[in-house]
Length: 87
Image 1 (cartoon, rainbow, N blue to C red):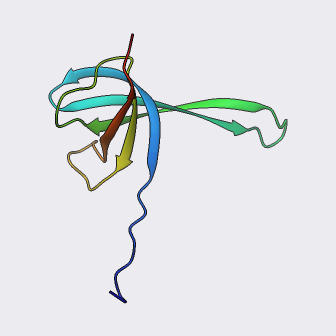
Image 2: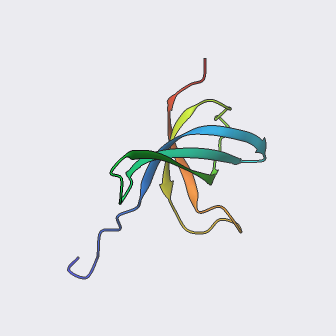
Image 3: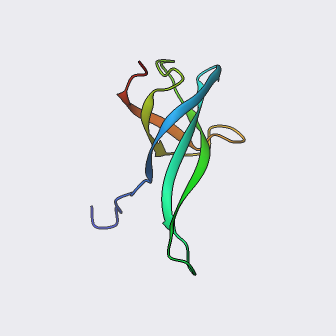
C-alpha cells in the first residue's frame, strides 16, 4: 500500500466527428487559450483517436474520453461515457 501511487489519467470532453472505423472514433476536442501578446481568447482544436469497444458512439455525440495505454499506432484514448447523444 505504501508504494502504490494513484495513477491520474487525463480526461477530455469532445464531439465525435468520425465513426467509420471498427471500434475507433475520432473525437474533436476544443479548448480556449489566451494569446500571449494580445490577451485575446482563441479556440484551439485537436482530434484524438479513441477506442469505442461497444460501438455505441455516432457522429455528433458528445463523449468523455480518458488517456490509456497505446492501443494502436494512433489510439491512446478510450471512451468513458456518452454525455449527450446527437439529435
